[in-house]
Image 1 (cartoon, rainbow, N blue to C red):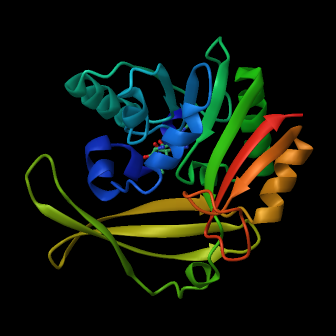
Image 2 (cartoon, protein in one colour; image 1 turned 120 degrees about the vertical axis):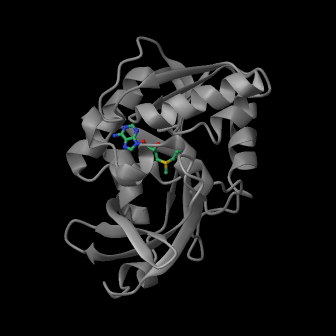
Image 3 (cartoon, rainbow, N blue to C red; image 1 turned 180 degrees about the horizontal axis):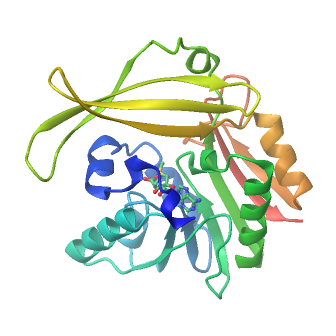
Length: 250
Ligand SMILES: C[S@@+](CC[C@H](N)C(=O)[O-])C[C@H]1O[C@@H](n2cnc3c(N)ncnc32)[C@H](O)[C@@H]1O
């Protein structure tokens, strides 16, 4: 499975230039403050969140499929003098040989679980790594009908980065189509230098509708103890754009 890393997750230096939001950091800091014991971030990427949490000398562990993302997380951690415990592995089947007081899956990484089998295998791995009173917390956006019904020809500007090798500025545009049967948005990311197209890359994300996500947790033996609809902990409701779930094993 390691070879199945999506192209945008191959080089952490590029990922960090394109995805550098901070809106969720204080949410995760507060959620983990109240927890006694170690935390594991599943799909930790380049440590965008993990490094902020580790800065308080709290022991933090991370797992990710991509060697390139983890390598950049380790490089940044060394530069900042933060100790991270990083592991390469698949969120659908990992074994770190220990348990945690909290396991988190931030920033829509759940969208890389494309089938029920993927979800169930992930939740089984989580269960094996949770302490008896441990919490499982995730952040997954609410599917946005406008995003899903975009015409395949419509392009939106995703972001920009400077190529670390040659210093050229590259723009990324997204187009794509939604498969309503599989609930997967299949995007094509076009990388352009000025008007010159450099390359195209695929990016696929599975949608999780709110009741479906709650039901998947329930039928896999989890109890939802809180569900927020915003990083300020507004309760989840009809206007919510994100699903912030806090769950325990029943
Ligand atoms: C949107 S990024 C989030 C990274 C980080 N949590 C953050 O908030 O910046 C999703 C991450 O999921 C990882 N990923 C995708 N599929 C995975 C899998 N099956 N197992 C573990 N990690 C996976 C990717 O390598 C990528 O680093």
